[in-house]
Image (cartoon, helix red, strand yellow):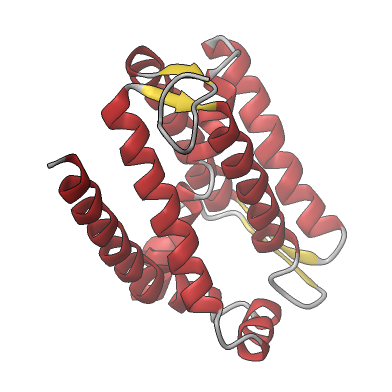
Length: 202
């Protein structure tokens, strides 16, 4: 029965990942010139992204069902996450800079603007989880805002993109969600090294 559940969970993870990547992530990423060029050169971009996201979701489910979270899983997840975050934030556009002070400018656009706003929230949820591991709420707010504003300033100063108040707002919401997700996850999981063959304690 457990094997059947795990197989069904894998299929669901693949299906959900396919929908998220194909209908949300790729349309937004295709709007970034440099990333769009990279995706054109590598024809398996969509397959790789779907496979990675499906694997993340499926392995998370397996560990959730056991109530144990592998440190190896965390290391691999956050290593890939931080790399992809760097790519999206600092290599998405050719040299240009812009200043947008409207905090709700994403509401003025169409479907693509809404999708990009959604991703701007999702990008920073894992970062909020990281902060939730150690930082108290006041420390979290200060560090998160400094990080986000720092990213926006780097994009603007070095002609890597736009300094947008709306991005700061959306990114902070993502961090806030991640920060508040950490306590229930911490209560559920027993974080330790887990055998990948038996899913038992090493």
